Amino acid sequence: MTNGNQETRFSWFIPIDGDGARAGTNRAERPPDFDYLRQVVQTAEDLGYYSLLIPTRFANGLFAEDAPLAETWTTATALAAVTKRIRFLIAVRPGFIVLGLFAQMAAALHQISKGRIDINIVPGGIQNDFERVGEFTDQSTRYERAEEFIAACRKLWSQPGPVEFQGEHYKLKDAYCSPIPEGQPPKFYLGGASPRALALSARQADFHLNWIEPLADSKARFDALREELKKSGRSIGMGIRTHLVVRDKEEDAWKAANELIDHADPAVKAQRRAAIAGTALVGAAAQAQEAPGHIVAPHLWNGLSEVRVNCGTAIVGTPEQVTDLLLDYWKLGVDEFILSGFPHVEECQRVAADVLPLLRQKMAAAG
Image (cartoon, rainbow, N blue to C red; front, side, top):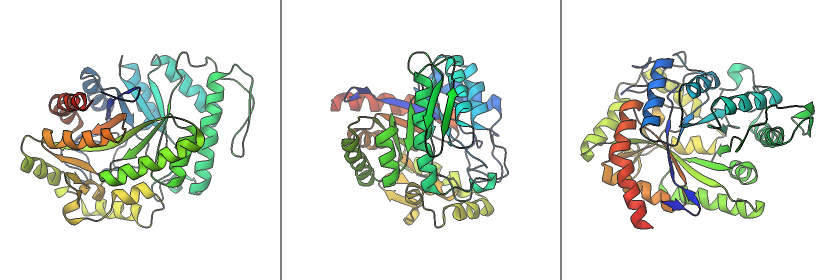
């Protein structure tokens, strides 16, 4: 069950916007309080998932914008302190915390968690999301800043101080990060579908993540990434982020998928349309493409894009159908699958019982 030398990993998701069997309502059935998120995380840890992706938001991205939202770094720190094995992939937007302070914060959490954190760098942004908190830089500047952010953090985490760094966006003078992370420092994940995102991943990432798309489109993204990697002379891991809607009968899976958005608040749907209208983000536009019945490919449904910012596509079907499709993505060279389902506790259990064992069997048979 490897691609090259990389063992295939299966990770889960922390629903900081809230959770439930219905998405896009004004408020979540299950608010994102610490006790509930801890239940999600402990379920994933008990079931043997590799890591947990915790996203970053400035407003709720699944329910009404003013609905409760768990802040990313604080929540990840608290959850790391009450777990023992599972890793945390923490989404971070460069520029909102002073670089040297962030490096120290990450090193501290690396120590607290005994080396169980990685960083998902998010240079892009949902329409008007940065602006709502006073950030008005353009997308090009944010990508340039992200590249320096990664390089400077790596320098702070690998060299004893004082550290110097001279970039266009970040400058360090006589900087220290102590203690330096022991063992393997946090790895950097980067996502994105644009040529700029792929090139940045090829130069700086340890792992590149794509939201799920029709197989041919995903293949084209990964092929383009490999071309960029040839230029940089590097080798990195590749991951897919997707929701799953799995039931024993196909008709029940489609019913469950449509039920997710059937009770959505029109005001929430309008807000999501406004967030994507005219976006410069290639991946976000691809997630929201129009298709009859939201079916963008066999067993691939993007109905969640009506109510959810960012990843809005799910694989829908029986365990056999879902694993056949996941196997096809694995054959493209995917090393890590970051999965989710609503509600996240019950679907974490369902996927662990009905999907992952069958998928591992098919991967082993495929060699």
